[in-house]
Image (cartoon, rainbow, N blue to C red; front, top):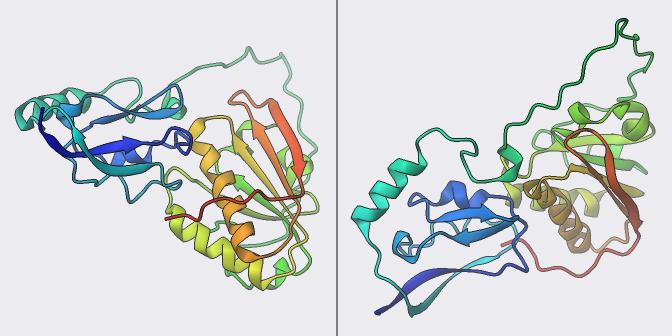
Length: 248
């Protein structure tokens, strides 16, 4: 076999976000058991278009013996992959599920009051030096969480300033840079990340931890993981942010 450029995946760094699957025009990558995998060597052209969007640096191009890139087979494969299917990008977070429950005869009216005290809440729109960050306990919530967990306002928002983001659909590098400056420029007292259980959502926690570290601040960190049915799977405080590699 010839020696050529081909993708290499560091599974220890891969968080299963699926961005590489989206970026690969040849459909050479899939998410399998929460990790990116090369489907077949002959589908990888070795140009590395999948590398730039990876938030963890798990992808690199190496030279090694590999089956030659097959353009004809790849075109056929791409056509088959683009045919509508259950998981369009291969990510477990896109799997269609219906877990509806029979409604009770009389639906109780919620007496939950809104607890939101800041605006805007979209991370992309928030200013890095907004006055409400002063001495704030900050909640960074993945977009889907508020629609999944009952009592989200009283359970998570109350007493905190809120920012929302989607690590799968938005620019991870932009978030990393913005959060780093936000933590550096403000007296934020604590940060809580609330995310879904799907692998791609772990990217938000990864970005926040890196940003705290890069800011040089010692900010107590807490992470809550919510199941797709709304149950709390895990939660816990981690006052020390581990040393991580910067986003590249």
